[in-house]
Image (tube, rainbow, N blue to C red):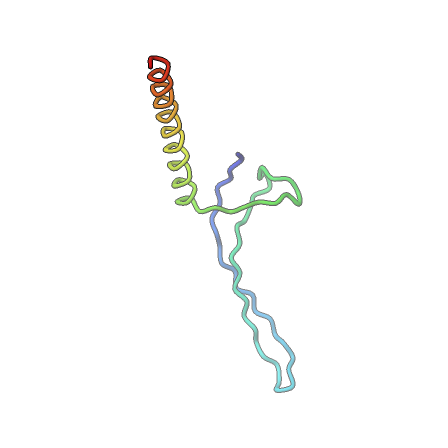
Amino acid sequence: MRTYDSRVIRRTLVHNEKTKNGPQKVIYKEFVVPLEFNHPFSEDELVTVVRKEDLEWLSEEIKDLKDDKENLKKQLELVNDKLNVI
């Protein structure tokens, strides 16, 4: 998995629209994740943005699942041994 550290920035864009009641100012707020020139992604590559806290939570859950898998394998071995003895 390729990772890249960046911060989310908020941009405010102001656009003047012509309406029949006269010109009105429209304000757009965007949240952007800027990438430097040497980012590890290629052009037009689909990228998913995940919060750091969520990534840490996911890593912990995967670690717990691996531990559970090992415990289950040990339990299955014990059950198979007991069946073979009977």
